[in-house]
Length: 323
Image (cartoon, rainbow, N blue to C red; front, side):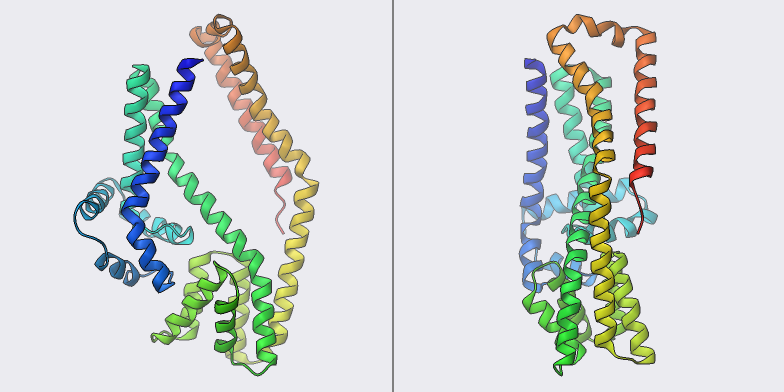
């Protein structure tokens, strides 16, 4: 029991240390980005942030992370990773993120090796830890996209009311950027800034679509681009889109409620065997040793894990209903 406690505390130490390094390295970028209130897919903002970085240890560490990431990364994947980082609002280059992931995985490997003295266990846990930053990025991205999705109907309603009041489309968007909360206010403000700096409104809206990767925002931008080409009552179009998005959100909530039992079943399927095995291991460690030491026991563990995986896949397909 004490060994598991020490292992958990050590892993938490590595995680907190990595988070501390991230905050130390990218604090200046956060300040610059907050002043600029900008999200971008091109290199211009990153060059501005690079020019405003501090000298000394922070710059050298950033350079080291970038060089490490470039050495172990593939060029074909860097653009997609950079877009994902921007969508998750992570203030770093793709190379620096890869370098930070490698540093985190190496740190976990050395901590586990020093605690357990088993290079195979340390290697396995170290390899698994490489996935944790990517999982965190995806969780943060999905959370931000969900917030945008919930804010979009209200933003469309503000724009529609502004158009009826006599505002132009850009003036109505400016109202959204001033009155609403992030992230929707930052995104609309970014569209206005790009347009003010020389990009056409169509290009700025397409950049907005790429930055968000959201179906409802794509629907809004597509309808807006078509209206700008063929004409029509924009306020009425935005009202219809807002109504469609609200109904979709409502139906998604109902589906989530109706499928809650299935999702809970999947959680129990995964957690129950692990919990029972951990409980028995604490009460009687020798009882579980044959399951780990004997070849037949390891085969049984593998078959059980495969069966659980298949069950989870089927449950996800049942409860995952597209709208």
